[in-house]
Image (cartoon, rainbow, N blue to C red; front, side):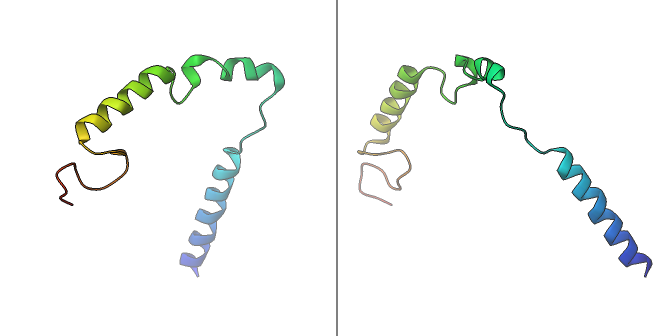
Length: 75
């Protein structure tokens, strides 16, 4: 009985904690802060493109990003 009460208590506390983490929609006046270059996944698209090109060239095969194997034909 005590174990069941503890389980329910832990579940309720956990649910309350998760409910406190609820996200709210972004207000129009907050969008300017989120649109800054520092907030982007890739702040400099040209540098990211160059990095991907260098990685693929070093991989030795076309489409080296996310594929298995190398330029030598081995897996």
